[in-house]
Length: 78
Image 1 (tube, rainbow, N blue to C red):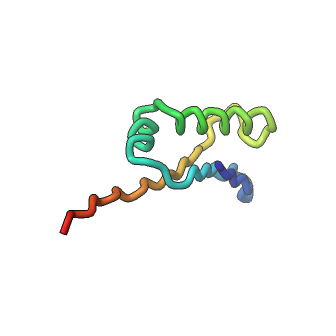
Image 2: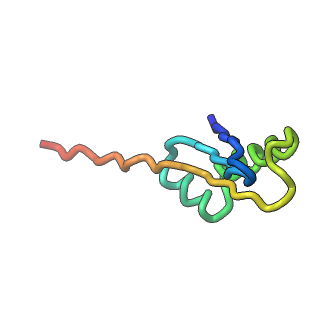
């Protein structure tokens, strides 16, 4: 579900963008804390990029985009 974008700019390395899509609020909070399933997804994406050579060992920005699903509102009985 993750997408990577690695288009090098002239002379500098472009940031890697990983789009994880929409997820529950609880999952997004766990990601911010460095835990949970989404963190495992990010870690596996980074490891895969390092194995393919798209991500160098030197410092390079990695941007993770996750959108939080809106809360469902309970229907009030009429």
